Image (cartoon, rainbow, N blue to C red):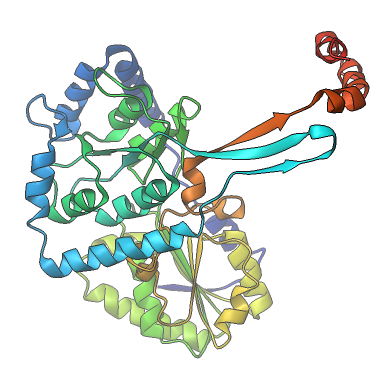
Length: 423
């Protein structure tokens, strides 16, 4: 891996902070056309696109419940046990995010409050292709279930049949509405609905570039979680770290496959940087994904050496990574200085995959520096907050003239009249 001496205002830091994958004009035009076709032509067009791009055979888009059940039974017992424990861990964590409705009663009979209600129907995009992602279903569906969402719809571009681990998780979570479709056509189906398929209130889940751009385009028709970019990890490591651990964790993100993943280490020690680089080179050399890793590391794989940890923390907060690991002598104390990160992993045994699969916090995290202003997926993403306002006659008599004066000052005659008629 490349080693570079840097300061917070270095050109390399600016390059890393500006990392993004913008869609080409061709991709944008294709997505726009697919969404238009789905919106205007409905189910027949969705099926046509699914046959062309998602390997759908025949005209049946929905995966039957019997197929889910039959496939789920093929999951090895040890993996079933691990997936069940992961589901339990994620549920326990997210139950702490549940919000309650509230109200306050003021003077003159004024009642104010906030009513919490779950969304009714949510769409979950699960990537397909060569991989299978039961963890995506767990991390997206469990907070929705905890929030009280009653209908969860899954779309996935499976090439043949559902993989057993995915089917097992669907069965465990009680998700039965599953469609064999991906890409922009799946997003269009969720957003607009089609014959016999209701539109959803919100779309969540990671996706390929076509589905990601489609999510952006349908926002406003439905809600979305985020526009996620390629995965990223930043590790803060000093001379007390195990360089082999650091290297392994950097490669855990570089292997995702787009070639734009960021795998960055910041250290205050050149010798530590050289050891981490050597360990990474050895692991890449023996990897079955060597070519893929080399491509990602060449672009955004860096070991950055800083003069001091004040600079190191400043750079980390500028990059605002999706995953931030701290392997230093005072890791917990250092974590308190981190303002921008999707998730913080403290200590040598808090490897990033612990969060991806098992610990409990959600692994759908802000990327591309958006941790500066956004948060991990959670129960709060699946609820609606409605304000409650109840004024009495006495409260209107006391405050009506003040309300009408503000309306008049803003030039809204009938706003003021709506109040004055009650006085």
